[in-house]
Image (cartoon, rainbow, N blue to C red; front, side, top):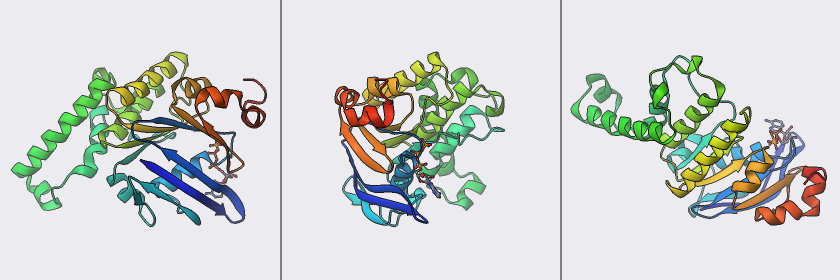
Length: 252
Ligand SMILES: Nc1ncnc2c1ncn2[C@@H]1O[C@H](COP(=O)(O)OP(=O)(O)OP(=O)(O)O)[C@@H](O)[C@H]1O
Protein backbone atom coordinates (compact mmCIF):
# COMPACT_ATOMS: atom_id res chain seq x y z
CA UNK A 1 0.00 0.00 0.00
CA UNK A 2 2.78 2.41 0.94
CA UNK A 3 6.20 2.36 -0.64
CA UNK A 4 9.00 4.68 0.40
CA UNK A 5 11.87 4.27 -2.02
CA UNK A 6 15.37 5.30 -1.09
CA UNK A 7 14.50 8.80 0.14
CA UNK A 8 17.04 11.42 1.16
CA UNK A 9 16.15 14.63 2.95
CA UNK A 10 18.55 17.36 4.02
CA UNK A 11 18.12 20.67 5.81
CA UNK A 12 20.99 23.05 5.12
CA UNK A 13 23.59 20.32 5.31
CA UNK A 14 21.86 18.30 8.06
CA UNK A 15 20.97 14.91 6.59
CA UNK A 16 17.68 13.94 8.23
CA UNK A 17 17.08 10.86 6.02
CA UNK A 18 19.75 8.91 4.14
CA UNK A 19 18.39 6.50 1.55
CA UNK A 20 15.45 5.26 3.64
CA UNK A 21 13.08 2.67 2.17
CA UNK A 22 9.96 1.24 3.74
CA UNK A 23 7.12 -0.95 2.54
CA UNK A 24 3.80 -1.26 4.31
CA UNK A 25 1.24 -3.80 3.13
CA UNK A 26 -2.53 -3.27 3.25
CA UNK A 27 -3.96 -4.09 6.68
CA UNK A 28 -0.60 -4.02 8.42
CA UNK A 29 0.32 -2.21 11.61
CA UNK A 30 3.90 -1.11 11.01
CA UNK A 31 6.10 0.84 13.38
CA UNK A 32 9.08 3.15 12.99
CA UNK A 33 11.33 3.56 16.00
CA UNK A 34 14.67 5.21 16.67
CA UNK A 35 16.45 7.54 19.09
CA UNK A 36 15.76 11.29 19.23
CA UNK A 37 16.72 12.97 15.97
CA UNK A 38 16.82 9.66 14.05
CA UNK A 39 14.49 11.01 11.35
CA UNK A 40 11.09 9.50 12.27
CA UNK A 41 9.09 12.73 12.06
CA UNK A 42 10.93 13.71 8.88
CA UNK A 43 9.86 10.39 7.35
CA UNK A 44 6.21 11.04 8.29
CA UNK A 45 6.50 14.55 6.87
CA UNK A 46 7.79 13.15 3.56
CA UNK A 47 4.86 10.72 3.39
CA UNK A 48 2.29 13.45 4.16
CA UNK A 49 3.66 15.93 1.64
CA UNK A 50 4.91 18.41 4.26
CA UNK A 51 8.47 17.86 2.95
CA UNK A 52 9.56 16.82 -0.51
CA UNK A 53 12.58 14.50 -0.36
CA UNK A 54 15.50 15.64 -2.56
CA UNK A 55 16.09 12.05 -3.68
CA UNK A 56 13.75 9.07 -3.90
CA UNK A 57 10.02 8.77 -3.96
CA UNK A 58 6.96 7.91 -1.90
CA UNK A 59 4.09 5.98 -3.53
CA UNK A 60 0.68 5.17 -2.17
CA UNK A 61 -1.41 2.44 -3.81
CA UNK A 62 0.98 2.51 -6.74
CA UNK A 63 0.69 6.27 -7.26
CA UNK A 64 3.61 8.61 -6.75
CA UNK A 65 2.99 11.37 -4.19
CA UNK A 66 5.68 13.57 -5.75
CA UNK A 67 4.66 17.24 -5.83
CA UNK A 68 1.40 16.72 -3.93
CA UNK A 69 0.46 19.14 -1.14
CA UNK A 70 -0.58 17.72 2.26
CA UNK A 71 -4.29 18.34 1.56
CA UNK A 72 -4.04 16.39 -1.72
CA UNK A 73 -2.24 13.53 0.02
CA UNK A 74 -4.94 13.51 2.67
CA UNK A 75 -7.68 13.33 0.03
CA UNK A 76 -6.02 10.18 -1.37
CA UNK A 77 -6.68 8.51 1.99
CA UNK A 78 -3.68 9.19 4.24
CA UNK A 79 -4.49 10.85 7.54
CA UNK A 80 -2.31 11.65 10.49
CA UNK A 81 -2.76 11.74 14.22
CA UNK A 82 -0.47 14.52 15.42
CA UNK A 83 1.69 14.29 18.49
CA UNK A 84 0.96 17.95 19.23
CA UNK A 85 -2.80 17.72 19.17
CA UNK A 86 -4.60 19.41 16.26
CA UNK A 87 -7.75 19.92 18.35
CA UNK A 88 -9.59 23.26 18.66
CA UNK A 89 -10.05 23.97 22.40
CA UNK A 90 -13.15 26.15 22.14
CA UNK A 91 -15.03 23.58 20.04
CA UNK A 92 -16.85 20.54 21.45
CA UNK A 93 -15.75 16.95 20.88
CA UNK A 94 -18.38 16.35 18.21
CA UNK A 95 -17.48 19.61 16.43
CA UNK A 96 -13.80 18.66 16.37
CA UNK A 97 -14.66 15.25 14.93
CA UNK A 98 -16.86 16.88 12.29
CA UNK A 99 -13.82 18.94 11.21
CA UNK A 100 -12.15 15.66 10.27
CA UNK A 101 -15.07 14.89 7.97
CA UNK A 102 -14.87 18.25 6.29
CA UNK A 103 -12.52 17.38 3.47
CA UNK A 104 -15.21 15.06 2.09
CA UNK A 105 -17.87 17.78 1.78
CA UNK A 106 -18.83 18.39 -1.81
CA UNK A 107 -21.26 21.33 -1.43
CA UNK A 108 -19.93 24.71 -2.52
CA UNK A 109 -19.95 27.84 -0.36
CA UNK A 110 -23.20 29.12 -1.87
CA UNK A 111 -25.06 25.86 -1.19
CA UNK A 112 -23.65 25.95 2.34
CA UNK A 113 -24.83 29.52 2.87
CA UNK A 114 -28.30 28.73 1.58
CA UNK A 115 -28.34 25.49 3.62
CA UNK A 116 -29.79 23.59 0.66
CA UNK A 117 -31.29 20.13 0.84
CA UNK A 118 -28.10 18.50 -0.51
CA UNK A 119 -25.97 20.39 2.06
CA UNK A 120 -28.29 19.20 4.85
CA UNK A 121 -28.13 15.61 3.56
CA UNK A 122 -24.34 15.81 3.47
CA UNK A 123 -24.20 17.20 6.99
CA UNK A 124 -26.41 14.35 8.25
CA UNK A 125 -24.29 11.73 6.45
CA UNK A 126 -21.02 12.99 7.97
CA UNK A 127 -22.55 13.55 11.39
CA UNK A 128 -23.38 9.84 11.31
CA UNK A 129 -19.70 9.08 10.60
CA UNK A 130 -18.66 11.31 13.54
CA UNK A 131 -21.20 9.52 15.78
CA UNK A 132 -19.80 6.12 14.74
CA UNK A 133 -16.25 7.26 15.53
CA UNK A 134 -17.39 8.70 18.88
CA UNK A 135 -19.00 5.37 19.68
CA UNK A 136 -15.91 3.41 18.57
CA UNK A 137 -13.60 5.48 20.80
CA UNK A 138 -16.05 5.70 23.72
CA UNK A 139 -16.23 9.48 23.59
CA UNK A 140 -20.03 9.88 23.92
CA UNK A 141 -19.83 11.16 27.51
CA UNK A 142 -17.90 14.24 26.33
CA UNK A 143 -19.86 14.84 23.12
CA UNK A 144 -20.82 18.45 23.96
CA UNK A 145 -17.83 19.29 26.16
CA UNK A 146 -15.45 21.95 24.84
CA UNK A 147 -12.10 20.30 24.27
CA UNK A 148 -10.28 23.05 26.18
CA UNK A 149 -11.46 21.62 29.53
CA UNK A 150 -10.82 17.94 28.78
CA UNK A 151 -7.87 16.00 30.24
CA UNK A 152 -4.97 15.16 27.94
CA UNK A 153 -5.81 11.43 27.72
CA UNK A 154 -9.28 12.18 26.33
CA UNK A 155 -7.89 14.82 23.96
CA UNK A 156 -5.51 12.21 22.49
CA UNK A 157 -8.57 10.10 21.74
CA UNK A 158 -10.34 13.09 20.15
CA UNK A 159 -7.24 13.63 17.99
CA UNK A 160 -7.34 9.98 16.94
CA UNK A 161 -11.08 10.36 16.25
CA UNK A 162 -10.52 13.43 14.08
CA UNK A 163 -8.04 11.44 11.98
CA UNK A 164 -10.48 8.50 11.74
CA UNK A 165 -13.31 10.81 10.62
CA UNK A 166 -11.24 11.50 7.51
CA UNK A 167 -12.05 7.89 6.60
CA UNK A 168 -8.40 7.06 5.88
CA UNK A 169 -7.01 4.01 4.17
CA UNK A 170 -3.67 4.67 5.86
CA UNK A 171 -3.37 6.19 9.30
CA UNK A 172 -0.07 7.69 10.49
CA UNK A 173 0.18 7.81 14.27
CA UNK A 174 2.81 10.16 15.64
CA UNK A 175 3.61 9.06 19.20
CA UNK A 176 0.03 8.20 20.20
CA UNK A 177 1.09 7.19 23.72
CA UNK A 178 3.23 10.26 24.46
CA UNK A 179 2.07 11.89 27.71
CA UNK A 180 -0.35 9.07 28.59
CA UNK A 181 -0.34 7.10 31.83
CA UNK A 182 -0.17 3.29 31.90
CA UNK A 183 -3.95 2.74 31.72
CA UNK A 184 -4.43 5.29 28.94
CA UNK A 185 -1.52 3.74 27.01
CA UNK A 186 -3.19 0.33 27.25
CA UNK A 187 -6.49 1.84 26.04
CA UNK A 188 -4.69 3.47 23.11
CA UNK A 189 -3.04 0.15 22.21
CA UNK A 190 -6.47 -1.55 22.31
CA UNK A 191 -7.92 1.10 19.96
CA UNK A 192 -5.04 0.57 17.54
CA UNK A 193 -5.72 -3.15 17.46
CA UNK A 194 -9.45 -2.50 16.95
CA UNK A 195 -8.66 -0.07 14.12
CA UNK A 196 -6.66 -2.84 12.49
CA UNK A 197 -9.01 -5.74 13.16
CA UNK A 198 -12.47 -4.12 13.02
CA UNK A 199 -11.92 -1.23 10.61
CA UNK A 200 -9.16 -2.85 8.52
CA UNK A 201 -7.23 0.43 8.34
CA UNK A 202 -3.48 0.18 7.67
CA UNK A 203 -1.41 1.99 10.30
CA UNK A 204 2.13 3.27 10.64
CA UNK A 205 3.18 4.17 14.13
CA UNK A 206 6.07 6.28 15.40
CA UNK A 207 6.45 5.66 19.09
CA UNK A 208 8.93 5.86 21.96
CA UNK A 209 6.92 3.47 24.14
CA UNK A 210 8.87 0.37 23.06
CA UNK A 211 6.77 -2.22 24.85
CA UNK A 212 3.71 -0.99 22.95
CA UNK A 213 5.55 -1.15 19.62
CA UNK A 214 6.99 -4.62 20.16
CA UNK A 215 3.62 -5.95 21.35
CA UNK A 216 1.49 -4.46 18.59
CA UNK A 217 3.42 -4.04 15.37
CA UNK A 218 3.53 -6.58 12.56
CA UNK A 219 6.90 -5.22 11.55
CA UNK A 220 9.25 -2.61 12.91
CA UNK A 221 11.68 -0.38 11.01
CA UNK A 222 14.52 1.13 13.04
CA UNK A 223 16.12 4.46 12.12
CA UNK A 224 19.38 5.75 13.46
CA UNK A 225 21.03 9.00 12.30
CA UNK A 226 18.66 9.11 9.31
CA UNK A 227 19.48 5.59 8.17
CA UNK A 228 17.36 2.46 8.39
CA UNK A 229 19.45 -0.02 10.37
CA UNK A 230 16.86 -2.81 10.73
CA UNK A 231 13.42 -3.86 9.51
CA UNK A 232 11.59 -7.01 10.54
CA UNK A 233 9.13 -8.65 12.92
CA UNK A 234 9.31 -7.46 16.58
CA UNK A 235 10.83 -10.74 17.78
CA UNK A 236 13.80 -10.21 15.41
CA UNK A 237 14.15 -6.51 16.23
CA UNK A 238 14.26 -7.31 19.93
CA UNK A 239 17.37 -9.47 19.34
CA UNK A 240 19.12 -7.38 16.69
CA UNK A 241 22.51 -6.34 18.17
CA UNK A 242 22.68 -3.14 16.09
CA UNK A 243 19.27 -2.08 17.41
CA UNK A 244 20.14 -2.93 20.97
CA UNK A 245 23.29 -0.86 20.63
CA UNK A 246 21.69 2.13 18.88
CA UNK A 247 18.35 2.36 20.53
CA UNK A 248 17.75 0.07 23.46
CA UNK A 249 21.12 0.85 24.99
CA UNK A 250 21.53 -2.79 25.98
CA UNK A 251 18.32 -2.74 28.05
CA UNK A 252 16.30 -5.17 25.90
N1 LIG B 1 12.75 21.73 9.77
C1 LIG B 1 13.98 21.34 10.07
N2 LIG B 1 15.03 22.15 9.89
C2 LIG B 1 16.30 21.75 10.20
N3 LIG B 1 16.59 20.53 10.68
C3 LIG B 1 15.59 19.69 10.89
C4 LIG B 1 14.23 20.03 10.61
N4 LIG B 1 13.44 18.96 10.92
C5 LIG B 1 14.26 18.00 11.36
N5 LIG B 1 15.55 18.44 11.35
C6 LIG B 1 16.73 17.65 11.74
O1 LIG B 1 16.63 16.39 11.12
C7 LIG B 1 17.04 15.36 12.01
C8 LIG B 1 15.89 14.37 12.21
O2 LIG B 1 14.84 15.00 12.94
P1 LIG B 1 13.43 14.33 13.21
O3 LIG B 1 12.59 15.34 13.94
O4 LIG B 1 12.89 13.78 11.96
O5 LIG B 1 13.83 13.14 14.20
P2 LIG B 1 12.91 12.25 15.13
O6 LIG B 1 13.42 10.86 15.00
O7 LIG B 1 11.48 12.47 14.81
O8 LIG B 1 13.24 12.81 16.58
P3 LIG B 1 12.32 12.87 17.89
O9 LIG B 1 12.18 11.46 18.38
O10 LIG B 1 13.14 13.71 18.83
O11 LIG B 1 11.01 13.50 17.53
C9 LIG B 1 17.47 16.04 13.29
O12 LIG B 1 18.86 16.23 13.23
C10 LIG B 1 16.75 17.37 13.25
O13 LIG B 1 17.45 18.35 13.95
